Image (cartoon, rainbow, N blue to C red; front, side, top):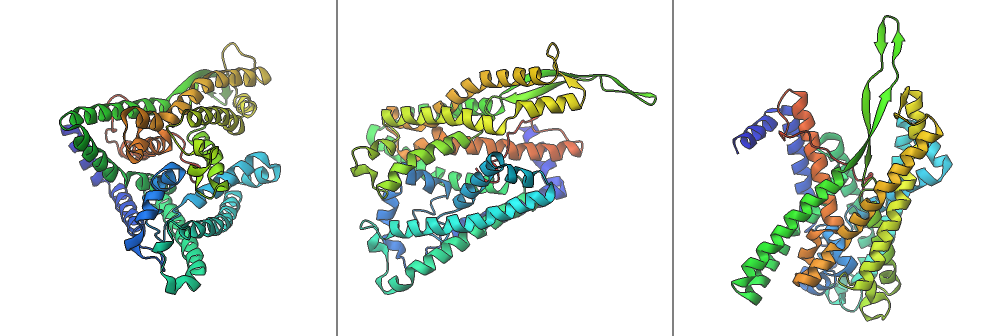
Length: 447
């Protein structure tokens, strides 16, 4: 405890780090305030049906990402999700389209072009999603919350306000990345997820005591122990690496000897991050779109919105495993890695440089990707499993795995890694005695 207090004092004593933390907190506070500002033309006292319909299924997951702003019909109802979608699309285009790949390799100017195109695409995606959200608000179950006198202006004003709101949240994320602490987009998503935890925990606590009396406390304790164990397992999954030994040939430059060092090539078990889960959820979200957000009444679409359904879990797991291999193949290039080693006079002991090295790295990556994909699929279906076994509410079960918990663990590790780097640069002790914190790749310009 004493070392923890000392570490907090060291963090606060660094002026640059202190200003970054304060700046980040202020912008996040602004974001949370905007999540409670209701759109014009909507009666906030009649939003109960909207909250109920957005509390389950894929809409419940979307509502969790934006911190409940979706169910509150706020000006930040779409949050930063359109920007995430645009960023993912542009990232895939830079991999699949050669012309886009050339632009990305132009350095800083190419990065600025990609970012600008992403912003333009964000506007289009937001306008499309805003129109779909208006249709959702005008559905029979939610229409009573609309103010009739404002109906003639509702469509235009809502599209404009939701688009501006998403762009403002995107701007907040970029400012946090530039002048704050951590990746701004990832932190905004994490804060939106964490904002629902107190309410979900309170509801679960009340439900346990109401149904089981004194036995509810024991069951709640068991659930908390499982949550801690899952978080520890996710940390191992995020940080898990396979180290491949690499040696560098000795070179004589003038009177100095260069190279001859032994190093390791870290290959991550989960190099795809959270992207396979996002892609799988996007695929399973399509039946909901085709049935107008009302998949519960459809005999075939209802299987893809019920997280406790065995059919959903099987299809979801298969999609996650398939997308893990696909996305890893897109972002991981063994040939390029082998060429970089050869260019820097590096080699793997016992393996010839060039194509044999690329084949060796690719084979190792395939072997470690399979267990990583299976574990990622297991993480994705854990909320449904716990909801089915323990009978807990869906809002609380989302914190037992899936995208929500994986994002929170990854973002917290990245942020702690940046704090530790600032401490070590100024010759302070790190955050841990056993070694440095290892983060994972930031959510790519988004998720």
